[in-house]
Image (tube, rainbow, N blue to C red):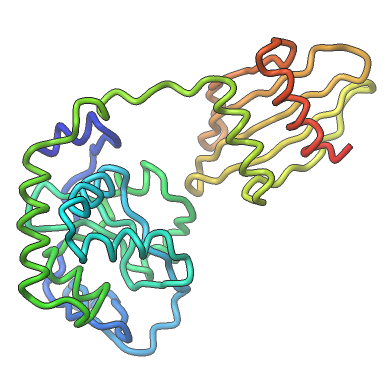
Length: 271
């Protein structure tokens, strides 16, 4: 069944993650690796940087379906994703080949590996851990939910998981140029994208923004503005170490995106 979810969202070529053999829940406890037996255990006074809760898109889609049944635990999970003032000891949760398990990262591993974005590669890592869903819920929410409530959630989860993703969600609509520019405008306005001017030839202004995906992979967005020509354009490139993979080039002189391009140019160049 997991193969169906691979088609729906993120492909998983990773091996099965590490299992937790020792874990107990609670808001004030933290998870650390036991260097003697490679298990995971809970310890007090862990000063690793706090982490918000993130889910893979395919797990989030299952949780949303569960919430439609009125399940309170699933709604708490969704609320926790949206609430950036809440912090957790485990994060980047995903489905597993084992129906009883979730895979995840501890906050310690997130900091150690330098994970900064909720991207597909995060869920393909072979450094991920696995544990029973029941244990993960206890780690996340302590005693907020009863054993019966957690077991009910797990039962519905298994049912939804086994049915596979909705066919309408398997094929996602390709992003248009308008979608791309709108997203760049939104992220620039919200401060998610930072632009710097890159020295170029006379008559050309060049601006660059970089989105880190992993330590060796990042998305590079470049905006080219010509002083005396109507040939402004935007490029998107995926950089993996020193290798450049071209993704898309958007010319701004097409009538359907002129208004959006004007807005983007104004925001980036601040003119």
